[in-house]
Amino acid sequence: MWRKLVVTSMRVLLIVAYHLLAAGLLNIRIEHFTRHAAGLLMSYLLPLTLLALTAHLYFIHSSRKRKAAWLVGSTVPSTILLYRITGGYDSLEEQALFIFDRYSIEMGIWFPFMYLVIQFVLLLAWLAEWRSQRDGTSYN
Image 1 (cartoon, rainbow, N blue to C red):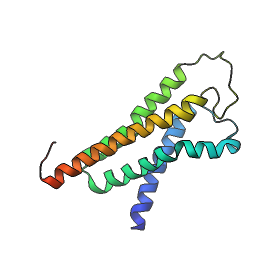
Image 2: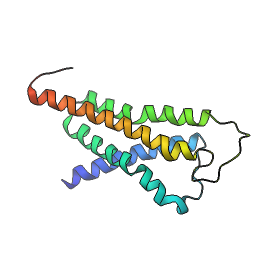
Image 3: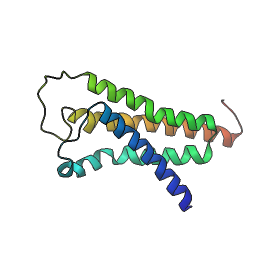
Image 4: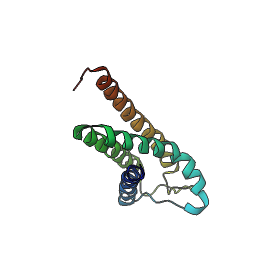
């Protein structure tokens, strides 16, 4: 039981580290992190919880193909979203005095919401696969 929890936590931390690395490479910086940490936690709590749930479900009960789909679904769309967020700003634009340097609304609202939607779709896909296996039908 503890081993499964630790492995799932490591997968979630790997995805979080990947996103932090991608944000760092795209020069998305967090300003005044200690002052706004509670707001960030509230904004990202539900997407991270759903990420942990889908990580557990996909890696305990799915085939290699589904595990690869989870990994791609958890990284590629959000990386594209991060890239699109940074592409919408000029280097001469005025900086906002919020949590994220120039990207407060996108990283505080849009990114967590879109990641929540992505993880919810992955959860629905897993549920559809589970239900088809339970009923004895296969949609592969």
